[in-house]
Amino acid sequence: MTPLWDGTLNAKLESILDFAPSEAKRLIDVATTATGVDPLVLPVRAFLVRTAAHLVLIDTGSGSTKGPTMGHLQSSLAAIGVAAEAIDAVLLTHLHMDHIGGLTDGRGRPAFPNAELVLHRREAEYFLDTPASQLDDRSARHIAVQRAFVGAYAPRIRRVTDGECLPGISAHLAPGHTPGHSIWRIGPPEAGVVVLGDVVHLAAIQLPRPLVPMIYDVDPEQAGRTRLALLNEAARSGALVAGAHLPAPGLGYIVRQGDEFAFQPYREPD
Ligand SMILES: [Zn+2]
Image (cartoon, rainbow, N blue to C red; front, side):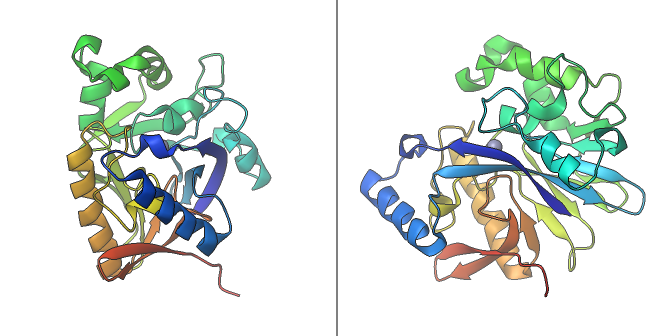
């Protein structure tokens, strides 16, 4: 698996819900000291997975939808010598713009013309099938754009339920951030990678305090429960995890420190 940099997104302390601003600021300062970078400058990443049979992209970054600090996924692919045409499957964790904005080329055509688009059935039902008037306000805001970007892949859109969708790759519903947010498990449980999507959005806050939600969560309480369960599982199993907004390189391990969790970045073996 290769993390692909799309750019950065400026997170704001105000987007953290139900949490004392002074404590949020303290945790941000702790993370800044520990890593040497401002954790509110949130990285945006997608992930490339090479299996025996497929070249798979998980999420697509923001494309041209979010301004010049993002939308660098295509250059990141070119830098490692991968042509967009070579990708035969695009898997989505959820339908927020920093994950699907790179689906099209700016003229509404698929940016990955030979790819099948795979997403969880629950996410499709919420964002694609629900009348806009019945969506939550935040989800309704860009719904026409979201539907157009996903729709560009018709008829090669596959809605999946939990389980294997490509050899060695399986979907698992991890709801809260969005109703059909899913994680992707790659390879065998003991030696694979778990792609967490936005289960963790702001690591500096949500690893030490997993139940703290963000305004981007459709169901903040459910998002917290999902995050806590998956962080516990990742810490217990020692599995490699990948996350769209996790600190560099976007790939690493979750470790438990008392009641808190921390991220241990993956380092290439020497
Ligand atoms: Zn995101």
